[in-house]
Length: 183
Ligand code: SF4
Image (cartoon, rainbow, N blue to C red; front, side, top):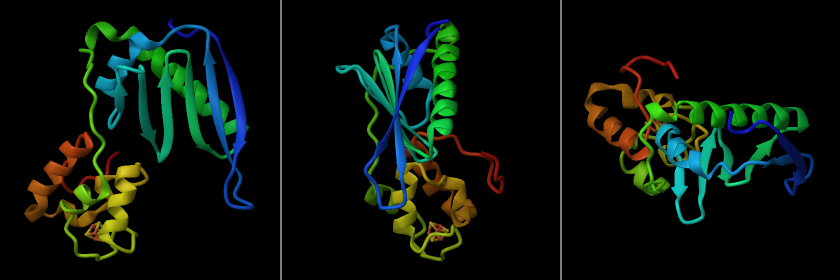
């Protein structure tokens, strides 16, 4: 096991009045630099900076950053959620490290696409079937990790198969079968 113990620091972050949010830092007593290229290979949408070294990742719209001796987590509801997310991330690091012989490490820095680039590949009908007011809003949320490709039902139509495949490549995500809502 790579991480056997850690200290969790939870703090409030400035937000809108009445909408208090928390950020947390998982302080580690071991250097996890060696696992970052393996996480870069396995985490969808991760951005690895080998110079730092650091790896940033968005999960469920939450920003996460892995550093050699700490993991920073943003957009948390409370301390209970911070503890749960921290525990999950420590498990993820340990599990990835244990599986390192099966994973080819990736030392490349992958670029995260911008909303305009993503918008250009969306159907641009502004039909609202995804629950968003426009395709551009959907593009912004897609980049931020708040929604998934499958949330746009129009992209599942056969005529958009090419655009859907390009978006999956751009966003570095796997596609479920057309018509499936599995995540
Ligand atoms: S469902 Fe797809 S096409 Fe319709 S508004 Fe949302 S992103 Fe645009």
